[in-house]
Image (cartoon, rainbow, N blue to C red; front, side, top):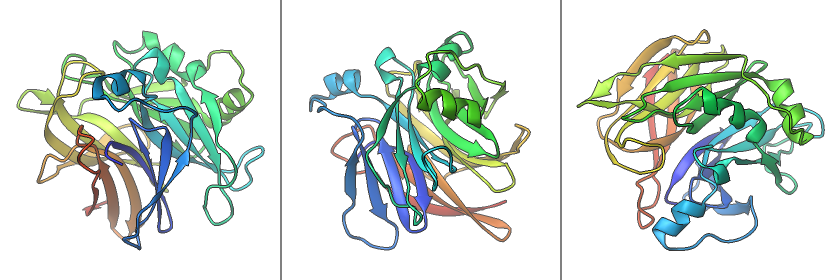
Length: 282
């Protein structure tokens, strides 16, 4: 996979979505063996970069959902970015007791939750998703023209019931927290993914990408990881030594530190995504 954009780790298994694929990647963090793919959507994407970009579902976020109706061991939920009409699809994959994918994927229409956000942001671009307590929280990514980083809150039970039963009714967010992550050389740091911590805080990754809209790629001139408190306040932000375009993050608490895994998207199909590791103070 080259355009890794969302990461969930369960034990030594890393689940990865890529924004230009129709599959979920499954890798072992304990073994160098090749990973495998689980198909999420039917069909095939063209090889030509521009046409592939136009037609891709743009899966940018992956969240671990706790047990609910029909999914006694929880599920993985993939989210399209919502940045174009064809990017409002998601997928739900049930898990077994060991955290492995069990059964076929279920395609989801995310329009009930993404549609109402059209009036909240100049350019919708959902890049991260976490479940914290009884809430689903989506992370809106800004850009150079519209630096609108935000965390969008929903009651988890309402979202899961509405999407699973394919109800067309709009699901309005319960709150929207807007955050400024700062600039580097005039380019704002903007969310690319997040992971929930046991106390409700959230660890996130962000990049400063020199682009003025949610569709076109630009040069990545900086990258960072940080922590946001459960109440929505920025607690810390640490720049990475190198401007890797980190787009997926997983966190494991270890005493007073967080061990992080991150995956990258080089915006080049010839360059495989990287799996990076680091740790930060909690």
